[in-house]
Amino acid sequence: MNQQHILIVDDEPDIRNLISDILADEGYSVATAANGEEANKQLTIKQPNLVLLDIWMPDIDGISLMKGWIENNLITAPIVMMSGHGTVETAVEATRIGAKDFIEKPLSLAKLLQTVAEVLAQSKQQDSAESESEIAINSLEPIGNSDAINQIRKALERIAKTKNHIVIEGENGTGKYTTAQLIHNKRHGSNQPCITLDIKTVGDDFEDKVTGINGCFNRAQSGSLIINNIDSLSTVQQDKLYSYLKHAHYTIAQQNTAQAINFQIIAISEFPLATQIQTGDFSAELFQLLAEDKLHLPCLAQRQEDVPELITYFVNTLPDTEQTPYRKISFAAQNTLRNHQWNNNIRELKNTVRQLLLNDAEGEISLDEVTAMLSQETTDEPSVFHNWYSLPLREARDAFEKDYLIHQLKAVDGRVGELAKIAGMERTHLYRKMRALDINPKEIIKS
Image 1: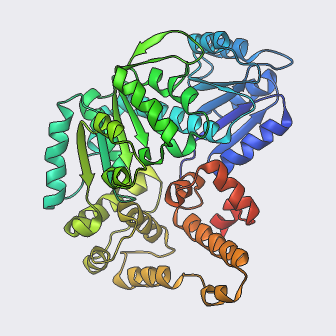
Image 2: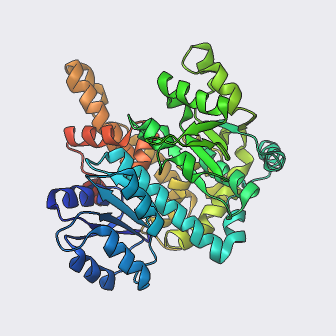
């Protein structure tokens, strides 16, 4: 897999090492530098995909260092500034010169990871748009010809002609985020920003994350704001978002500047919001503002005939996107996969195809190979399950949580960000939980 490379420039070794370890656990390639001289050397060794740059350093300040890089064409990667003494003026100056974002210290792990993911995604989207914009858009189109997926295609064509806010619902792994990106592409192409806000990673920084000078509302202007896990909004957060949408404007945090909302929200929920409204967990008024249009994505059990086409797509594209070996798959093997119960839908199917391609075998993927893998997944249930009942409640819970997290980590190749989505946990809490249970993602990948 072609890892994205991140350069961390900070004179504080504890912060450097902490960020480096966290990003490495997330699957990134990482290099570090303690000052401007070391940073310049790292640029000659390997060009990064992203730079996390501290503003205050002993030899040269980060803004001057960034300015020199840009003026001398030494870097094309996006730069995110970090500072323990951040001010609005500093953030404005940094972004005016060329920084993509600004993070205040002490660092919030959730905010750091969210910012890194968003900036890298925007950079990748921009690169793809410049070179192969049509291919990028077409690759997001729904795959299959079932009645269910044909209805989705018709709905997408209708939605693309509007500027409505949208709610997308569907089971875990049905492609809600990919569909949200497709809606943005159909409406705006690559000309306008597409920003993502994951509610599970926001924490207590909701207002700053949304309406701050570098908040998602400002960055999404004239484009789209994808709000993932909208069902996880707290009551207070729902009230704030409702107020913004009701008045169609917001006040930029730390300023007295009013800004009109000039973007479309694409809200994603795994759980039916109508049910949450009935239980009092979600605001009916907010739902009416968000759900100007609605889209429900079917699970694989409702479009089983599309599974062979999805398999073919993954077999043909994973070797290019992830450098897996290319192997054909027999019709008998495809038929078995078609009739399998995919609890995590497209995501689980893709992971299974990836593992089959990576198997230490040659030639066509056979029925026996698929049967053995599916059988192994079934028997990979906790071997100590029957012993949990003899343990004290706390020990039994810890044993289950450790086994569950290890199982899911293996399924997503050790990617903690993907595990957080599956487990429904904010990544800060997930890291703490893994440390408490002595789970090392790097060791899981090796096992």
